[in-house]
Every structure is written in structure tokens, then in C-alpha cells.
Length: 264
Image 1 (cartoon, helix red, strand yellow):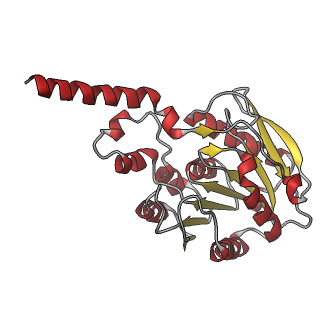
Image 2 (image 1 turned 180 degrees about the vertical axis):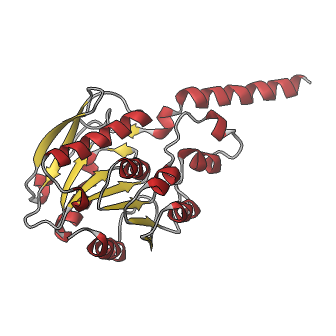
């Protein structure tokens, strides 16, 4: 009896600890900016965004002469915008301008990250592009991993030309339930990031890109996310692990999708 009570107490203690500290399991912000687009030989504009709750955010706008459109990039849960220079270069070479921003608590942005806060941050980035007279139909919302849920939320709230979700889950509790099958994750989770619900409400072409060998976000979740999206939609198989980035075939697939669906 005593052993059973002890085990139950330990289990409940672990559950309480996970509930109280789960933000540390979701967000891994990095404050130091290690490099800028100038290290790639690209001109860029340092942008200060202001979310609707007053939080000031740091962002970069990288123009592209004769651009085919503008990518609004929502990065994943770790690092900051300086760790996405390879993607800035990729889209610049494909002929797209980019606005990439740091969520609150990341890089030089103020505050601390929260789920609701990341949505407000993305909306501030969208509003900045609209204020600069960027046609909504020429904006590509691109989200990687957790940023895919943010981009999907933004797509349901606005009218972008296209939505691209790279290595994104259906919801954060779905991922947690697979990582911690011995915990009641769905009851404990204070973070939802329900990308599956958001993408089902988006009214734009959707590309879901996922690797069968993704070790962090299961491929099956990527397929379920794709199934929830409305037509027109495409699924793109990637290769490698969760953080390997895009190979040549992946870049070509994204370029073909955007060329087909983005407003002329």
C-alpha cells in the first residue's frame, strides 16, 4: 500500500511539474543575433513591429528586385531569425522578398513567448506588409514546425496568396502525447497550437511539406494536417530529419507550387 501511494505521489508530482514548467518544453528562444542578411551580401531593412498589446518586435525585410511575391516567414520554436539565413537566401534566389520576424522573447523582440502572443506577433507582421501596400494575394505565409501553426492561424484570419507548412504538427498535444505516452498530456497541456483546425479554415492554396524520417514531428501528423486542408492543396515529401532543412527536390517543389498558385 505504501509503495503504491509513493508511486502515485511521484507520478502526480511529475504531472504537476510538467504542467507548471511546460513553457520551457515548448519555447527555446535565443537572444543573440549571430549574423544578418548582409553577411550573405543581401541588403535588408531592420524593422520594428508593434503587436496589438504593445510588445515591440524585431524583424528584417529583405527586398528582391522584380520580386514574384513576398514571403512572411514564421520560424520554429528555437533560435531566432539569424538562424534562418539559409532560407532568406533560398527565397531571394527564387525571386521572393521576405519579411522574417522574431516572436516576443526571441532575438531583440521584447517580452516573453506565449501562444496567444505568437499569434499577435504574426498579425503585426502581416499588418506591416499590408500598410506598405503589399497585395494580400502576393503574400506567401511560410511556417516551419511550430511556426506552421502560427502561419496557419494567420491564414485563417487573413487572405494570403498561399500557405506553406514545413514539418508542422496537427496540434501540440498530439505531439506531446506521442513523446510522453505515459502522461495525460491532453489534460495537462496549456498550449494548443491547433494547426489542424486552423488549416481547415484557411481559404488559400496549401502546401504541406514533411519528411518520412522526421524524428520530432511524426510524418503521420503531417499527413493528417494535409488531409484537413481545403483544396487546392499539395503534399511534398522531404528527406532527412526535422532540422535538416530543404534539399534540392524540396526547394523545387516549393517553387513549382508557388509558381502555380500565387496570384500573377
